[in-house]
Length: 510
Image (cartoon, rainbow, N blue to C red; front, side, top):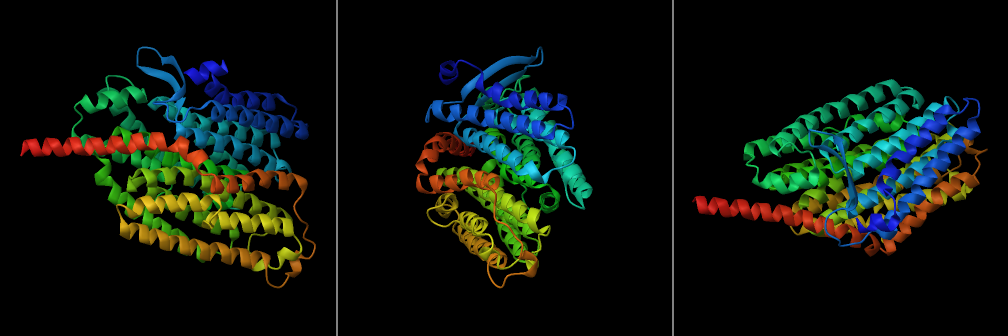
């Protein structure tokens, strides 16, 4: 609250709803004024990003609870409120969202030539939905934003995607909607047991004494976990992801990989684990096994891909599996590493999709068999691709290394076998990613690449801030860990306390 008063305005509400205001302005513009439509959309997303930087400036690392809180009555008489706030986990995800949305709009400047106004409106509405998810502290408000982010992405894939865009859009929509239905039912049950309130901080205080039967807690955990596992996506609920990534326009793939997948992992951290801490130790081994399967499966399938965009899509399955492994190792180090790796994956995989889009705009193909020898023609693009690939595979000095190393370090403390398998997954990641770089940039020059041109100033301006962040996170990780560690330590301590309490009850019962 102090930070909010220093700012003198409800910053979180402004961040969430400024894109809606921008969408309204864009919708009112003449359809033929395409450059004005693009300019207004870009200006709006840039304004939101600049405003979000104030959160970083005024955020107080280590302060208890949530910061920048805003509360108001939303549905009088039903205990449903408008409650926003963030901690060190959601802070970084908000900044990631606002940055990638700016880059998504810029990447669409030349790539999207049809129904530009509708496209930009959907991008702006999607930003509102995703930001709302990361700052909501009320179950039903969270659910509203969660569903609100589903429709714009489905429409972006279905209208501006590839040849199988309708199939990919419907599959994405149905998978996510089905998972959300379980979350809604679980939310209603929690609302009733929690004393007719859906406020998350209140539920965290009242549920331990609300007398929820253990069996019911297990089922509620499963219901929430299904919704979040679909979004991650956790093996075997991942089948919608490759199609959605491959068929989506470049900006859609960037936001999908960089932001929407993180909503699933964030849901586990914000709801599943803190609300049902006594269930977590029972579920953690099973979820860790599924995460490990996803790491190996995603890596092996990525190795077999000829379509470079499909390769990056399957790499997301593997990388998100790595993040889930860190979360459910349940050590402060592994969970902090997982949170940072969520940011790292959003940056590196988002950058890979941006670069694939640049290549596709020039060659109109994503088949690596049609690439080769591009380094001689496009050294700037090649340099960005090499740095991004090295970031993705975890080269020391870059962002990916910090997250992966911290996850493994924390996981080794409790699960040596799982950490060893995860380490093997890193080897596989280096294999498929460096193979893709070699096939794309080196070897004999393909005849189809003879007239290839290097990146434009606009494209360089898109990639430059991301690459800078690769080095900033890799060289100065404590800038980020000092914000991540306090809420993560509180989360893992909550689980440990619940387990000790249950153990004490069991001993006294004996």
